[in-house]
Length: 167
Image 1 (tube, rainbow, N blue to C red):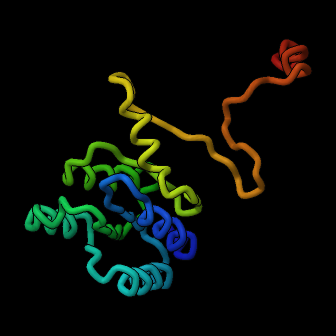
Image 2: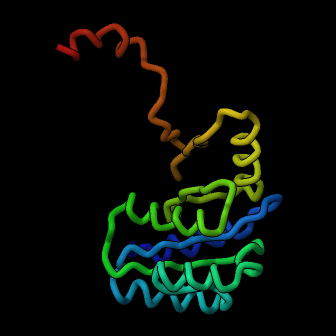
């Protein structure tokens, strides 16, 4: 949603991942007309073979081109006419991924940076190491180098005074 510059960086980094069969599904959640035009222009220059259209258009293309749809490296742009919210946009991408019969889905915000070209392959491998893994998440580090993981050890003072803070 209106993140054309970040989207370009993130999508290119995902496309450079190695060691794994992947396709990229971009879901536009009713961005401004200018933003969507910039995304379409960039995408047609970067990947002229990208499949673009409404959710129905893209799913129809996948069903009509099953062999090509199963190839690695495909890019799909699903354009929504209404903003369905963060989860709604994710669900649209997941439905398309289900149509593609993928083994796993990575939900990535456009402002994510994935510098390690083996990141997705490593995450995928860890996800399927055990038979009871259904969701995997990696450590998130901000551009300032600060760990953004919400699960952290409480400090001594937090442990000492938590009953007071609770009251």
